Image 1 (cartoon, rainbow, N blue to C red):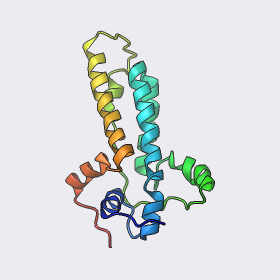
Image 2: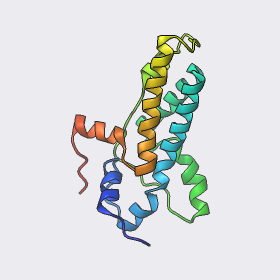
Image 3: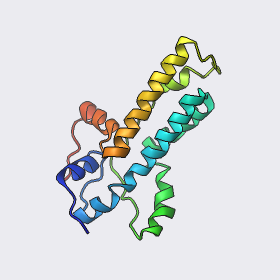
Amino acid sequence: MSTVTSTVRERIQAQGFCGLDDATYTQINYPLRLSPAICMIWAAVGTVLASATVLWTLATFAVLGAILPGHPFDVLYNYGLRHLSARQCFPVTGLATLRLHLGDHNAHRSGMELPRSPPYRWLQSSGGSLVAAAFVNVSTGFCIPALIARICFGQVVCE
């Protein structure tokens, strides 16, 4: 198994996964991007369709991801996909981050479906930023919500 780089280790630790060996960091590096990928696609669909229902449903999963020890979408990996590659479950993280764009959802809570209205353009811009942030995580492993948490609460210190 390849050795994990310090950058990869730091990015995973910033999400609260501390005290793991290099082999575990290497194993979970890409699978940790599954939940952000699902959120990215879901947010893109909800934004393109301007669907309050789609975005509020995604918000529910975001809240659950913040209050539970792991993200609900991690279940897909832990109880399914990991068996295809004979890998271990995700370790429980000590850090719960929440990234909700309530503005995305509030813009359509009353069912606004006017493509030329300013709120729709704002929704597209805000939804686009959510998709972009998820894309950064999926493509690089850099978690913007973890960065925001670090700015607000300090760096995650792994002992």
